[in-house]
Image (cartoon, rainbow, N blue to C red):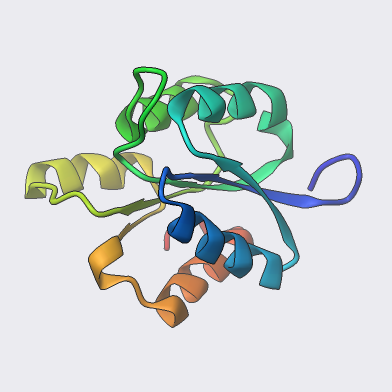
Length: 135
């Protein structure tokens, strides 16, 4: 919760439809959404709002700025002010079992876009927002 009493979630995805759906899901839970449609904006948002963020939803492939979702996750884990923010990876990328295992070491949940289920995603989000970072 930030100084104004708002709970803020960061959505990092370049797909406007995905952003709109995620924003609506967050708003239904009383969470203000900040959208970052490219990696430059994502990094700037993390720098400016780190202490205000309750959750981050990150796509692995994002344009602009030369960073991928993998890079954003690494950035978040390397900086004390963002290291404890729960991360949900929401991706349409096929990842290998090795990549999946690597991701699971650094994020709270991995959700595939082609297998997206609103109810399941809501449960993951609610669990993480309640302080249980093992979704």
